[in-house]
Length: 280
View 1 (cartoon, helix red, strand yellow):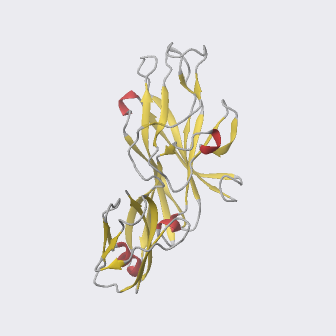
View 2: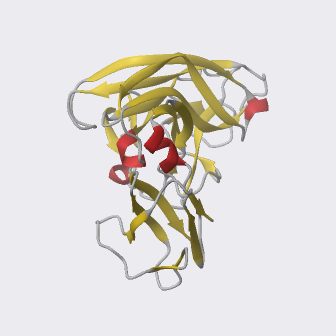
View 3: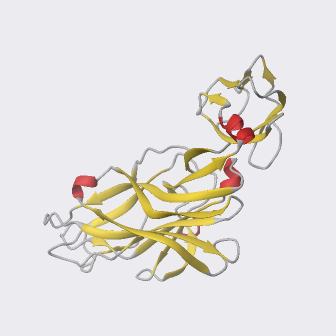
Protein backbone atom coordinates (compact mmCIF):
# COMPACT_ATOMS: atom_id res chain seq x y z
CA UNK A 1 0.00 0.00 0.00
CA UNK A 2 1.31 3.48 -0.83
CA UNK A 3 0.17 6.80 0.56
CA UNK A 4 1.58 10.30 0.31
CA UNK A 5 2.75 12.76 2.94
CA UNK A 6 3.65 16.32 1.97
CA UNK A 7 5.74 18.35 4.34
CA UNK A 8 7.62 21.62 4.51
CA UNK A 9 11.17 21.04 5.70
CA UNK A 10 12.66 23.97 7.61
CA UNK A 11 15.82 24.77 9.57
CA UNK A 12 14.18 27.83 11.17
CA UNK A 13 12.87 27.89 14.73
CA UNK A 14 10.31 30.54 13.75
CA UNK A 15 8.59 31.14 10.42
CA UNK A 16 7.86 34.78 11.31
CA UNK A 17 9.89 37.30 9.34
CA UNK A 18 11.16 40.24 11.39
CA UNK A 19 13.11 41.87 8.56
CA UNK A 20 14.61 41.31 5.17
CA UNK A 21 17.78 39.28 5.24
CA UNK A 22 21.23 40.80 5.03
CA UNK A 23 22.06 41.23 1.33
CA UNK A 24 24.34 43.03 -1.07
CA UNK A 25 22.68 46.35 -1.87
CA UNK A 26 23.40 49.22 -4.24
CA UNK A 27 23.61 52.91 -3.38
CA UNK A 28 25.44 54.70 -6.21
CA UNK A 29 25.76 58.12 -4.55
CA UNK A 30 26.69 56.56 -1.17
CA UNK A 31 24.15 58.79 0.55
CA UNK A 32 21.20 57.28 2.49
CA UNK A 33 17.60 57.99 1.59
CA UNK A 34 18.28 59.86 -1.64
CA UNK A 35 16.16 57.57 -3.81
CA UNK A 36 18.87 55.67 -5.70
CA UNK A 37 19.07 52.73 -3.29
CA UNK A 38 18.15 49.20 -4.30
CA UNK A 39 19.13 45.54 -4.28
CA UNK A 40 22.17 44.11 -6.07
CA UNK A 41 22.50 40.54 -7.33
CA UNK A 42 22.11 37.99 -4.51
CA UNK A 43 21.67 34.24 -4.32
CA UNK A 44 20.48 32.80 -1.00
CA UNK A 45 21.00 29.10 -0.24
CA UNK A 46 19.95 26.46 2.29
CA UNK A 47 20.61 22.72 2.29
CA UNK A 48 18.20 19.89 3.12
CA UNK A 49 18.74 16.15 3.46
CA UNK A 50 15.23 14.65 3.72
CA UNK A 51 16.40 11.62 5.73
CA UNK A 52 17.40 14.04 8.53
CA UNK A 53 13.68 14.87 8.80
CA UNK A 54 12.54 11.25 9.07
CA UNK A 55 11.93 10.53 5.37
CA UNK A 56 13.14 7.35 3.71
CA UNK A 57 13.04 5.87 0.20
CA UNK A 58 12.22 8.18 -2.70
CA UNK A 59 11.63 11.85 -1.92
CA UNK A 60 9.84 14.23 -4.30
CA UNK A 61 11.27 17.76 -4.08
CA UNK A 62 8.29 19.88 -5.14
CA UNK A 63 9.08 23.52 -4.42
CA UNK A 64 10.61 26.22 -2.24
CA UNK A 65 8.98 28.46 0.37
CA UNK A 66 10.10 31.85 1.69
CA UNK A 67 8.73 35.18 2.91
CA UNK A 68 9.08 38.13 0.52
CA UNK A 69 10.34 41.47 1.82
CA UNK A 70 9.85 44.11 -0.90
CA UNK A 71 10.38 47.89 -0.81
CA UNK A 72 9.35 50.08 -3.76
CA UNK A 73 12.16 52.61 -3.35
CA UNK A 74 11.42 54.84 -6.37
CA UNK A 75 7.63 54.64 -6.19
CA UNK A 76 7.20 53.27 -9.71
CA UNK A 77 5.49 50.08 -8.46
CA UNK A 78 7.54 47.62 -10.54
CA UNK A 79 6.77 43.91 -10.87
CA UNK A 80 10.03 41.97 -11.11
CA UNK A 81 10.90 38.40 -12.04
CA UNK A 82 13.33 36.27 -10.06
CA UNK A 83 14.07 32.54 -9.86
CA UNK A 84 14.10 29.71 -7.35
CA UNK A 85 16.58 26.92 -8.06
CA UNK A 86 17.24 23.41 -6.78
CA UNK A 87 20.71 21.88 -6.90
CA UNK A 88 22.57 18.74 -5.99
CA UNK A 89 26.34 18.68 -5.41
CA UNK A 90 29.12 16.15 -5.85
CA UNK A 91 30.37 17.07 -2.35
CA UNK A 92 28.81 18.30 0.86
CA UNK A 93 27.73 21.91 0.34
CA UNK A 94 29.28 24.49 0.17
CA UNK A 95 32.10 22.43 -1.33
CA UNK A 96 31.78 20.69 -4.67
CA UNK A 97 30.23 21.48 -8.03
CA UNK A 98 26.52 22.33 -8.10
CA UNK A 99 24.19 20.72 -10.64
CA UNK A 100 20.88 22.48 -11.20
CA UNK A 101 18.03 19.95 -11.24
CA UNK A 102 15.02 22.30 -11.24
CA UNK A 103 14.12 25.98 -11.45
CA UNK A 104 11.04 28.17 -11.57
CA UNK A 105 10.57 31.91 -12.10
CA UNK A 106 8.19 33.99 -10.00
CA UNK A 107 6.97 37.59 -10.05
CA UNK A 108 7.03 39.84 -7.01
CA UNK A 109 6.01 43.43 -6.28
CA UNK A 110 5.38 45.76 -3.37
CA UNK A 111 1.94 44.17 -2.92
CA UNK A 112 3.75 40.96 -1.89
CA UNK A 113 5.71 42.51 0.97
CA UNK A 114 5.48 40.11 3.92
CA UNK A 115 3.73 37.40 1.87
CA UNK A 116 4.69 33.72 2.16
CA UNK A 117 5.65 32.45 -1.29
CA UNK A 118 5.43 28.76 -2.17
CA UNK A 119 7.02 28.43 -5.60
CA UNK A 120 6.39 24.95 -7.01
CA UNK A 121 8.43 23.33 -9.77
CA UNK A 122 6.67 22.22 -12.94
CA UNK A 123 7.62 18.61 -12.13
CA UNK A 124 8.85 17.10 -8.83
CA UNK A 125 12.49 16.10 -8.62
CA UNK A 126 12.69 12.52 -7.31
CA UNK A 127 15.78 11.67 -5.27
CA UNK A 128 16.74 9.21 -2.56
CA UNK A 129 15.92 10.71 0.83
CA UNK A 130 19.60 10.57 1.79
CA UNK A 131 20.46 13.09 -0.98
CA UNK A 132 21.56 16.57 0.04
CA UNK A 133 19.42 19.13 -1.81
CA UNK A 134 20.42 22.78 -2.08
CA UNK A 135 17.56 25.26 -2.39
CA UNK A 136 18.24 28.77 -3.65
CA UNK A 137 16.51 32.05 -4.39
CA UNK A 138 18.33 33.90 -7.18
CA UNK A 139 17.63 37.66 -7.07
CA UNK A 140 18.69 39.84 -10.00
CA UNK A 141 20.14 43.32 -9.46
CA UNK A 142 17.61 46.14 -9.69
CA UNK A 143 17.92 48.44 -12.75
CA UNK A 144 18.43 51.64 -10.78
CA UNK A 145 16.28 54.80 -10.89
CA UNK A 146 13.55 55.42 -11.86
CA UNK A 147 12.46 51.80 -11.29
CA UNK A 148 14.71 50.77 -8.43
CA UNK A 149 13.47 48.51 -5.67
CA UNK A 150 14.75 46.34 -2.83
CA UNK A 151 13.65 42.70 -2.70
CA UNK A 152 14.99 40.27 -0.10
CA UNK A 153 14.07 37.05 1.68
CA UNK A 154 12.53 37.21 5.15
CA UNK A 155 14.70 36.49 8.17
CA UNK A 156 14.72 36.62 11.95
CA UNK A 157 17.07 35.96 14.88
CA UNK A 158 14.91 33.29 16.55
CA UNK A 159 17.31 30.41 15.93
CA UNK A 160 18.21 27.82 13.31
CA UNK A 161 19.68 24.32 13.27
CA UNK A 162 21.72 24.76 10.07
CA UNK A 163 23.37 27.79 8.44
CA UNK A 164 22.23 29.61 5.33
CA UNK A 165 24.55 30.95 2.64
CA UNK A 166 24.95 33.89 0.27
CA UNK A 167 26.75 34.74 -2.96
CA UNK A 168 26.83 38.13 -4.68
CA UNK A 169 29.10 39.15 -7.52
CA UNK A 170 28.60 42.86 -6.77
CA UNK A 171 29.97 42.42 -3.26
CA UNK A 172 32.76 40.02 -4.24
CA UNK A 173 31.12 37.01 -2.61
CA UNK A 174 31.78 34.56 -5.43
CA UNK A 175 31.61 31.37 -3.33
CA UNK A 176 28.76 30.49 -0.96
CA UNK A 177 29.54 31.70 2.54
CA UNK A 178 27.60 31.82 5.79
CA UNK A 179 26.18 34.99 7.23
CA UNK A 180 28.33 34.43 10.32
CA UNK A 181 31.38 34.65 8.05
CA UNK A 182 30.37 38.21 7.06
CA UNK A 183 29.68 39.15 10.70
CA UNK A 184 25.90 38.65 10.74
CA UNK A 185 25.54 35.48 12.86
CA UNK A 186 21.99 36.35 13.97
CA UNK A 187 20.68 36.62 10.39
CA UNK A 188 18.56 33.45 10.23
CA UNK A 189 17.13 33.08 6.74
CA UNK A 190 13.62 31.60 6.31
CA UNK A 191 14.05 29.42 3.23
CA UNK A 192 12.27 26.05 3.21
CA UNK A 193 11.95 22.96 1.00
CA UNK A 194 8.52 21.56 0.13
CA UNK A 195 8.51 17.83 -0.54
CA UNK A 196 6.55 14.63 -0.59
CA UNK A 197 7.36 10.96 -0.12
CA UNK A 198 5.54 7.72 -0.81
CA UNK A 199 4.92 5.88 2.44
CA UNK A 200 4.62 2.11 2.76
CA UNK A 201 2.29 0.64 5.38
CA UNK A 202 4.79 0.87 8.26
CA UNK A 203 5.94 4.35 7.29
CA UNK A 204 2.35 5.50 7.03
CA UNK A 205 1.74 4.26 10.57
CA UNK A 206 4.84 6.15 11.72
CA UNK A 207 3.49 9.30 10.06
CA UNK A 208 0.34 8.96 12.18
CA UNK A 209 2.25 9.37 15.44
CA UNK A 210 1.02 12.61 16.99
CA UNK A 211 3.60 14.83 18.74
CA UNK A 212 2.30 18.08 20.23
CA UNK A 213 2.60 20.92 21.00
CA UNK A 214 5.64 21.92 18.98
CA UNK A 215 7.09 24.39 19.95
CA UNK A 216 6.66 23.24 23.55
CA UNK A 217 7.13 25.00 26.88
CA UNK A 218 6.28 22.42 29.52
CA UNK A 219 4.93 19.03 28.42
CA UNK A 220 5.33 17.23 25.09
CA UNK A 221 2.56 14.73 24.27
CA UNK A 222 3.15 11.63 22.15
CA UNK A 223 0.22 9.56 20.87
CA UNK A 224 0.74 6.34 18.88
CA UNK A 225 -1.77 4.66 16.54
CA UNK A 226 -3.07 1.27 17.69
CA UNK A 227 -1.04 -0.51 14.98
CA UNK A 228 2.28 0.43 16.64
CA UNK A 229 3.89 -0.64 19.90
CA UNK A 230 6.38 1.62 21.59
CA UNK A 231 9.92 0.38 22.24
CA UNK A 232 11.72 3.53 23.42
CA UNK A 233 11.56 7.33 23.42
CA UNK A 234 14.49 9.70 23.76
CA UNK A 235 15.02 13.45 23.44
CA UNK A 236 18.49 14.43 22.23
CA UNK A 237 20.35 17.72 21.79
CA UNK A 238 21.93 18.61 18.45
CA UNK A 239 25.25 17.10 19.58
CA UNK A 240 23.53 13.72 19.91
CA UNK A 241 23.53 13.66 23.73
CA UNK A 242 20.42 12.19 25.33
CA UNK A 243 18.71 14.53 27.75
CA UNK A 244 17.39 13.54 31.17
CA UNK A 245 13.80 14.32 30.14
CA UNK A 246 11.83 11.10 30.63
CA UNK A 247 8.76 9.76 28.84
CA UNK A 248 6.05 9.03 31.42
CA UNK A 249 2.36 8.36 30.78
CA UNK A 250 2.48 9.61 27.21
CA UNK A 251 4.29 12.83 28.04
CA UNK A 252 7.81 14.29 28.27
CA UNK A 253 8.30 17.10 30.78
CA UNK A 254 10.79 19.53 29.23
CA UNK A 255 10.83 22.26 31.88
CA UNK A 256 14.33 21.25 33.00
CA UNK A 257 15.79 21.80 29.51
CA UNK A 258 17.14 24.98 27.97
CA UNK A 259 15.29 26.61 25.09
CA UNK A 260 16.46 25.46 21.70
CA UNK A 261 16.21 22.72 19.08
CA UNK A 262 16.20 19.01 20.00
CA UNK A 263 15.66 15.72 18.19
CA UNK A 264 12.94 13.35 19.38
CA UNK A 265 13.56 9.67 18.54
CA UNK A 266 10.61 7.30 18.85
CA UNK A 267 11.41 3.62 18.30
CA UNK A 268 8.38 1.43 17.57
CA UNK A 269 7.54 -1.99 16.18
CA UNK A 270 7.04 -0.27 12.81
CA UNK A 271 10.42 1.46 12.79
CA UNK A 272 12.08 4.65 14.01
CA UNK A 273 10.60 8.13 13.74
CA UNK A 274 12.84 11.18 14.26
CA UNK A 275 11.36 14.64 14.65
CA UNK A 276 12.74 18.11 15.34
CA UNK A 277 11.37 19.60 18.56
CA UNK A 278 11.58 23.26 19.55
CA UNK A 279 11.55 24.15 23.26
CA UNK A 280 10.54 27.75 23.93
